[in-house]
Image (cartoon, rainbow, N blue to C red):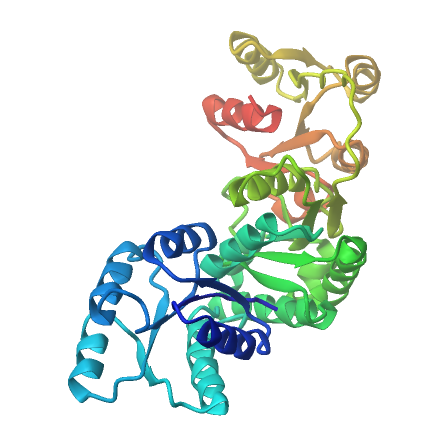
Length: 427
């Protein structure tokens, strides 16, 4: 649930109290001020969505509204003028300078609430994503800011669908929207009244919830998404656990099925603004690397200490049946400051694989060695070592199914191969 911020500007205390109670009964946050300077401070700090201005202020109502409208042009709050005047010219002038509505002081409490609810409904509906029916990016950013300013403890969950761009490209816009709509329905089924769900980008979502519920929500969402995944793919794609985009004549990186990745952090005293929240979530979600299942990561209590530096990836093991090509690959790798070793056969490969501990393996696909090399590929993929399979026999489906990360049809450009090696080494 999203609470808007409402600012009431009036010099009559009893009027401010009356409007404040009426709006708070609608579960919105209300601030009260009696002058321009204080009002501007509240507007800038809270980025209020509604401003209710009474003509009890010292300045002329229309002049005051004109100033407020100019000073809030960047986020344009809804301005409601309240006046004891019934003169038509006063009403028209007030609306012309920027007020969204004009109410007389004699308005009943019930009508005041209904008019406010009408503005609130239009404001919220104009911010809703048309596909998911969840709130859009601007309101999500405001929701994060509001939680940082209050004392309540909350957790933030960033939700990304891995490889959804590829799915959109291969399966089309309608199928893509159906995925988002399904995920939105699952999310809505997990939330309670005080929770918030909205977009960070078109296909990235954020949930704000109680820290005690964060892991339960993340666990349920990943479980539910994996259990409905077969609805979005053909039986062959789902059973293979990857999709093929092009023919055997073109190289292709192995792209698995969509997976839900979730990162969750709790608000703490070091978080200064919403950008810090999003940066921390985006760094944390990089730990979700399992291609075969949806994954979530929860940021636990941080311990003070030192961490051993992560081993730099820089080793390539080559098993290429063409001797001249294998030595050329090794030489070009070394020219690019990449450590490379050549295996002469399967037995030599197994020994080097254990002692050399490669980060990337280049494996040739030969018809005679096909079954043996498929077994090698399956072992390599289980070890989380990047595998490039080159082939002159154009059998992309079988190669990618064996666990290869990249299919390279022969002949290929050496520069192209080196570029892929560097990508897998994150150089």
